[in-house]
Image (cartoon, rainbow, N blue to C red; front, side, top):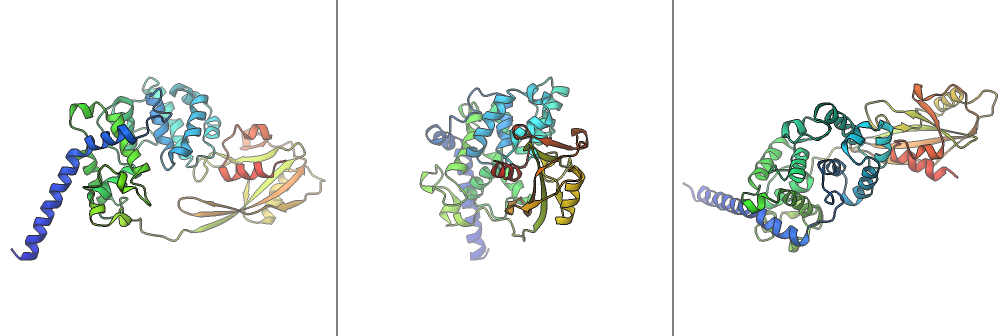
Length: 375
């Protein structure tokens, strides 16, 4: 064996030994840290139920805790349990979600609740496969619900946990790649508690993993001095904290443009159009969209009473970023108009008062526009 190969073999064995040491002590170290530094007063930890845990996990997908908390309170105040959610109208669910973004989460939540009522006696199933089969519940979310609602030993792998495990074990490659994610799942499984005392605290263990990534092992400027694993972290030892986890390969983000037609009548009501059931802002109420000014006037003439002078004005452009593209919105306001009597909810159109707007699911930039420009 050459000297280079010998050194590589020794280094690989040392790394494997370190990894094994990290994994074996991971749960106990993490729980000790959590007892002192973890978050213990989150609203879904108080009066913990499977429903509250599930709702929080769905809301926390792509959204930070501080943003979620007021939405969580508002949601459970209006819909306190799973049957209440299942029985709610889709508009009420979307209105409660309005502003939180990623609205497919709300639609999936509502659909899953109805499935639970129809097939699981009005409760979340405790079986992993049945839970995973519900709309909007992926592998990590299912594990998080089982661990936090019923204290069962299931691994999770959300963004925070991926970051912690990637740095701790020095895992190369973008975590979104199947091979890298497969390795991280193996690490997450191997890191599960094994002692009786730790297994009895699966809810705390699961929360601790998320807390460590959210408050200490952050994406930028991590607080390594406060980390319970700073003496064994591969990224810290090899000075690779800034490069782990590896970034997603960059792609140019396209920009799209649209015009929104805002018809506001003499009573201050706004004409809304329900968006298609699929795509961006699916099933939400929004302002009609057109390609150009001529099309905007066609829409205006269609819904405004004849023999009236139609005046319009451009409002400030709205820039809104989605995950895969940026949207540039040019609103065109037709104010003080007299509506035709041909608009009804049954054709996906409605005139909504300011009070009614609050109870409807409306895209956040559209809601901000209406609120800002409404006297």
